[in-house]
Length: 561
Image (tube, rainbow, N blue to C red; front, side, top):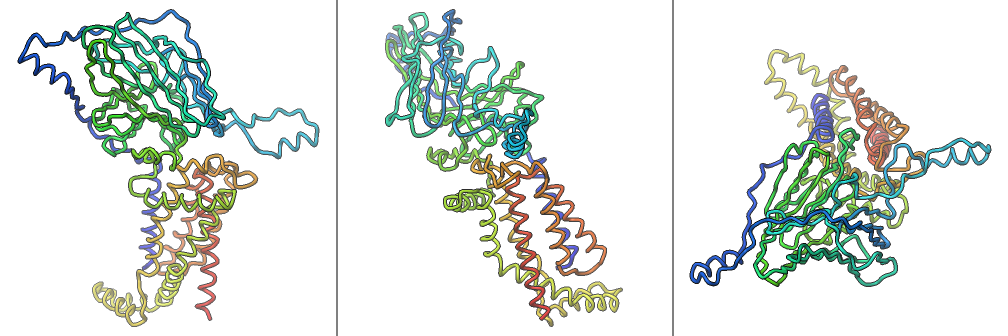
């Protein structure tokens, strides 16, 4: 393969990478019609048609509970994984702090050297805090409804999202608990309807059960449609992570739908067959898993007050007089850790944005990385060892590539002579060139084939390192304290560019000297791209370059002998 083809491949790779990182947006299909069925209502209608005396008197006029004047109270739930604060206002979630996960903080530092300097010199210089505190999945402004509020729109009787409930306790301590415990919120409206929200907490994980029971206190049937919502404040001026997604997400018939908050100019509806829905950031998610996905739809909205909401609406249920109905959900509020998400068996692990195709490469690579981390308590060193393993696997292909390029370089004078001899006959040049390759047993594609095979590996590892929470705030050493973030001093990208320049200089040149000079510009282009890449990915590419330099030196020396 000549230098022009290699240049085209490298430029295509660069363009694809830039497009994927900076410009690619998920396709948003048009909202599907929401299927709603009510077998009980159909049956009642049939019975009424045959015997009017049996027709139930259904309350059709919608009534809404008014805002209570009772002061709301807080209820604290603490486990080894999180501290949750619920409010009796809405029987909803006021705060949900994840233990062991610190907030991202550009103004904070964990750099030990300034602190040692202050200690040695006795300086009173004020240093930035080491942390902004724990990650809190709840972010609402004053006056906004709290997440996990349940309302009943399009129902006989609705419950306001800020209605004040009664609770069965003010504190649950599950830190040393071995069994599940319940938190019950109850609210009665005008002696017509009673709603119970029963949260069931597991002391061992981030999964919470939610049963919503509706008691019809009247003699007439009620039509009730539940709506469970998660609210989040949206700051249009906040700088967003270009590699992550902060906003609504849902699995609709196993297809992932992600919407940018700024694009929610009107309410978007998806469904039915909602496997799960919720609000996500790059590394965390608050997800609802409905008990009956086939009759569930999800709505995503941004109102005039910059409140983002994602809701799931269940099926209509006819609740006979003096009887009750129940709606069941499973909640997952926690980190996007693959094993924890996969345990729900609804495809919740697809919320990790590995991509529909690259996930089949990213997931095995992440598994190997976690396996190595079990024995090496440093993800940075695990990345280096993974780089070495990948290089060993592709070592024979690398040898073949370097050998082919060297042989192609040796044939360049003969190819140039053919071009001069048959300069007016392009077909003859191609024919004689192929005959020359056959005579010397040279494969013109041998130099680029190994490169093409390794490109998917690079993109798979790129996804694995970019979106894996395992690397979040994981250090390598010294100034690199977060492998998921860029190198704050750009040291590793610059060294990476230098090693790529050395590798390019060692690569056998073929054809036009001008093309060779253009190829030497590629390290500069790649350095520019890698400046803002996660340092874990830069470390992989850097050590891959170092190993490639050693391999190329070995092959060049062997061929010279």
